[in-house]
Amino acid sequence: MRQVLVASRNAKKLNELRRILDEAGVAGIEIVGLNDVPPYDEAPETGATFEENALAKARDGFAATGMACVADDSGIAVDALNGMPGVLSARWSGTHGNDEANNTLLLAQLGDVPDERRGAQFVSACALVGPGLEVVVRGEWPGAINRKPVGDGGFGYDPLFVPEGGDVTSAQLTPAEKDAASHRGRALRQLLPSLAALADN
Figure 1 (tube, rainbow, N blue to C red):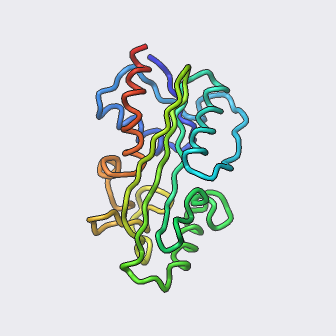
Figure 2 (cartoon, rainbow, N blue to C red):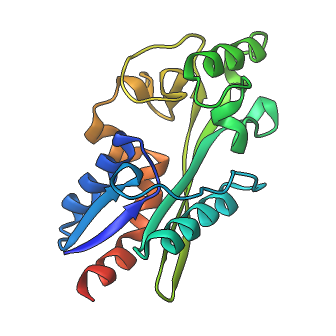
């Protein structure tokens, strides 16, 4: 059994990768998170792109633990805000990880924007770094910003995001429905061949 570190303390992110591996029939990999390894210095997320941040986090995790490491950087890109909050999504309101404040600020910024111009994409860049291995992939999930938060599933901007072609927010989807469509799910599936190769070694 090969351990693979996911550079996150978010149990929902860890479980998402576990479900995707199970669904794809990839065995021989045990997913561990940052709470399962000794603490190490994590570089601040200063990259200009999701890809830069994901790769930096994966390199740090691999260097510190010797385990192949998966890291993601994700956020929401709103058309009417020229792609912002983007890499600043988690700290858009000024406080890192305050979902309610971030959602409130985003709604205020889009208050006068008509429905047809409320397009947005969830974006996830995922990096996998291991011995002689660096892979970076990107997944996008198009949709639009709702006028109020709805649903209590998910996290971040999920209560505001209505996926393209749907009429409910991503916070109203089941975990399986979200895995099948989400930006992170789309990115993680692109890593499956590399993860399967790790399991076989």
